Amino acid sequence: MIKHAPLASLLLFSSLCALPSSADDFDSCVVKLKETAQAQGLSRDTIENTLAKVKYVSRVIELDKKQPEFSQTFDNYFSKRVTDWRVKEGRKLLKENRALLDELSQKYGVPPQYLMAFWGLETNFGSYKGKMPVLDSLATLACDPRRSKYFTGELMKALKLKEEYQFESSQMVGSWAGAMGHTQFMPSAYAKYAVDGDGDGKADLWNSTTDALTSAANFLNQLGWQRNERWGREVKLPTDFSYEYLGKDKAQPLTEWVKLGVTKSDDAPLSTPDMSAALYLPAGHTGPAFLGYKNFDVIMRWNRSVFYAIAVGHLADRINGGVSLVVAPPKQDNLSRARVKSLQAKLNEKGFDVGKPDGVMGRNSKTGLRAFQLSVGLVADGFPSEATFKALGVI
Image (cartoon, rainbow, N blue to C red):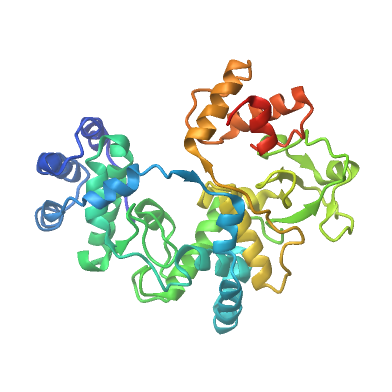
C-alpha cells in the first residue's frame, strides 16, 4: 500500500511553486524534487537512477499553457466522441468481455455498458494510451510554477508506483499530463483505486484489460456509483418552460420535473422514483435537454465536464442498444475567448456580476447571463446565443 506523504515533504512543495519552468532551471528543480522524494521515503536507487534522470519536455509546457482560440461547441465535442464506430466496437467488446463485466457489475454495481463507454472515450478501447514518458511529463510540470504542488504530488505517487510494481520507466507512458493506461488514471488515482484483477500480483493498467476494467469499476464504486440507477436521460421540455431550474445547483425531485411538464424525449411520462435530477442544456434551448441523476455527478468526478458526462452516459446507452438523440445537437459557431470576455465585461458593466472576464462560460457567467436574458425578455437559458450577443452589444 502507498502511504500518505509525511508533513516534511508537504513543506517542500511550497518551495517548488516559485521555480521557473525553463529548461535552464530544470536541473535545480530536480534537486528540490530529490529532496522531496527523500522526505517521502523513496529509495536511494529510485532517486538516483530514476528521478535524477528525468528530462525536461518543452512540449508538455506548451500543451499545459495552450489557450485554445475557440471554445468547443457541444455539437463539435459530442459528434467526435459518440460515434458509430465506438458504439459498434463497444458492443463487440462488451460481448467478448461479458463474463468479466457481469462479475464486475455484481461486485461493484457498475453496469457493463458504462465501463465500455469510459474505456472508449478515454483510449478508444485501449488503442491509444498515450506515448509521452509519464515521469518526464510530471517532472516538467512539477517544475512549472503554475501547478507545481499538484504535479509534484503526482510525480511522487508515480515514483512510488514504479517502486511498488517494479515498472520500467520506458513502460510508464501516457498523456502529456501524466494520465496512464487503458483508463487514463493519474498516479494518485492509480495508487488509490487500481486493482489487480487478473491475480498476477500487479495492478497493470497498461497491459491488462482485466486490471483496467476492474480498476475502473472500483473507481466508480468508490466515487459513489448508485447501483440500479441510470446516469440520466434525454428529456423533452414543454414549449412554455421557464428555464428557472438549470444546472446542479437547481436540482429538483423527479416529481417536480413532472409537474413542470418535462417528459422523456419520446413524450412518454417520466417515472418518479424518489430521486432528484438536474437539468442541462449543453447547446442552449434549441438543442437537446438532459436530466442528470446522481450517477451523472459521479461521472463528473471522473472528469469535471458536463459535455464529457453526457457523452459517457449516451454512449453507454447506445452500446446497450439505445437509440440516437431525438434532438440532434444544433450546428453552432465556435466562440472565441475574446468574444466571451467581451460578453462577460458587458454583463459586469450592466450590473450582472460574473467575476473577472476570463473567456470561459463557467457557472457564474451562466447565472449572470440568464439574469440578463430575463431582464430583456430573451429565453433565459444561460446560453450565449447570437441574440444575446446582439442584446449586449457585443459584435
